[in-house]
Image (cartoon, rainbow, N blue to C red; front, side, top):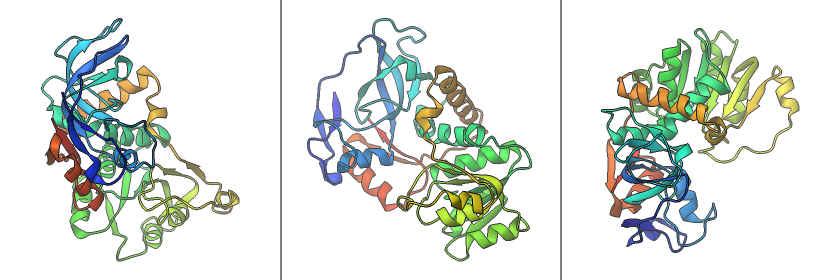
Length: 322
């Protein structure tokens, strides 16, 4: 099969197409023929060597496709079934293995490209709004990077629940995207202090929850934007790692809560995985959840895809199509 194989870590140029053996499923595994692979920053970290992996390796984790072959002991799936997962190791390829327990069915009729595009970001938005801080109608949420992949999905989910969404973005074009997703108020953080504006919009009360994927540059302002006993859900760090700080700060700002969640801990059981993936995929299939996936690349163009995603000049999900 054709695959992207990394034999040495480095820049995008190390993403080279190669002919490698098609894997064979072992007990509990499923071989899928990949229809689309989601491109995520974690693959860049592995490519650069920030995250360690034994060389050579095929990058990738998130993909959709059809079942090609079943390993011993696998039940619940049949050859030809449309499926998706966020733990398809080596998904920059034409075929890849996945543990059956981490694989979910894709609703009939749903474009597999959309399924690949929404799995990781959609389930992240789902656990943030449904579990980390379970939003209710009438709650107010501050959503940073609201025009990003997770931000747009999170905003849609929060709006559907009936929460008030205050979104932060960097440009007028991104502001329109956030409003289109259901944001009630949009703050251009490049033109105004988001903390002061958030306090003004909440009559100095503060928000119930901040969903923050930015990290270093927004952390202090995010904490100060919370109401007493509010929660900060820090689920990313696109601006860098948050410096060490004294936990007494949480006391002084109103007995605040803070968490640094990750998707794996919110899909640790089969029931949770099926709940989150089911809600997300059904939402896309029924048109209730909109996903942007207009940037597609051939497998041989994986290096360009990495260049484009790190440039931050694209919007929506980037996909590799074998």
